[in-house]
Amino acid sequence: MYTGELISLGVACSWTITALTAEVASKRIGSLPLNVTRMAISLLLLALILFITTGVPYPLYTDGSTWLWLCLSGVVGYVFGDYCLFNSYIHIGSRFGQLFMTLSAPTAAIVGRVLLAERMSALALVGMVVTLVGIAITILAKKENKPDSPSHTPQFKLRLPLKGILYATGAGVGQGVGLVLSKVGMRHYEASIAASGIADLSNFVPPNAFIHLPLGTIMPFASTMIRGLIGIVGFSIALLVFSHNGGKQLVHAVKDRKSMCCALCSSFFGPCVGVSLSLMATLYTSTGIAQTIMSLTPILIIAPAAFLFHQKVTFREVLGAFISVVGVCLFFL
Image 1 (cartoon, helix red, strand yellow):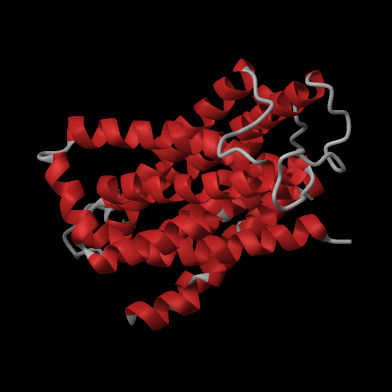
Image 2: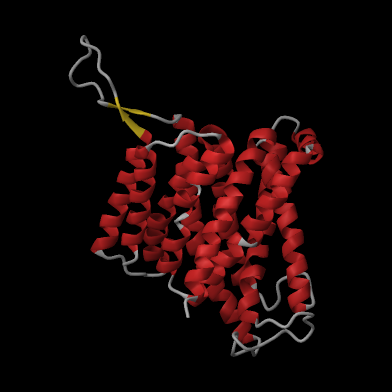
C-alpha cells in the first residue's frame, strides 16, 4: 500500500550507512581514489544484478536519448555531486555533509520547474526559506564583538570551515539537479521500451532472466548502471589529470584493507542499492513524497555518527537538522 514510501525510507537508511562508511574511507585515501574504486565495485554489483534479472550484464531496450540524459545525470549527480560530497566529509564530516543534502529538494523543485514544467507552489518557497534557516542555525554562531569593534561588523561567524560548506553546498545542488535529469532519462527509457513493443512494464519479464522480476522493477538498476559508467569515466579522468601521482594513489587505496571494506559497504548501500531504490521510489509514489522521506538522512545520521566518531552533538545542531527536514517536507505538501 505504501510501497514507494517504504522504499524511500530504505533509501534514507542506505544513505546513512553510505555516508558513515564513506567518511571513514575518504579521510584515509581521499575523495577521488575512493570514488573510482566505489564506482568500479558498484558497477560489478549492478552488472551481476542485471545478469540475474535480465540474462545480460548491461541495460536492455535503451536508445540514444536514454543514454544522453542518464549520462548527463551521472556527470552532475555523480562526478560533480559525489566529488563535492566526499570532500565535504573530509572537511566537516558526514553528519554536517548530509545536512546540506537537504538543499537537493529545493534544487530539484527549481530544476523540475524548468525542465519538466512541474508546479512549484508558494508553500514550496516557504519550504526553501525554512530549509536554509535550519542550515543557518547549525552552521552560524553569534560572534562576541570586542569593545573596540565597529558596530557595522558582522554579528555571526561560521562554526564550520568555509571550504567544507562550499563542497557540501555543491553536493546538495548536484544531487538535486542529477535527480531531475535522471527522471527525464527514465521517461526516455520508458518510451524506448514502449518502442520495442513492450507495453506493460509492471508485468513483462525478460525472457532470459534467471530470477523473474518485472522490467519496471529492473529499470532503475539499469538506469543507475548507465549513470555509473559515466561516473567512473569522469572520476578516472579527474584522478589522472588533477591528482599528483593518481595511479599510485589508486594502488595505495586498493591496498588499504579498511578503506576497501568501507568502499565496498558504501558502494553496496550507495550507488547500487540506495540510488537504484531512489529511482524506483519515484515509480511508486510522487517525486515530492519520495524526496521528502529520503531527506531524513540528516536526522537518522545524528545518533550513529555521535556514537561511532565520538562527536559531541548540541541541541542547536539537532534543531537545525529537524528544521531543514521540515523545510523539505513543506516543498511537497
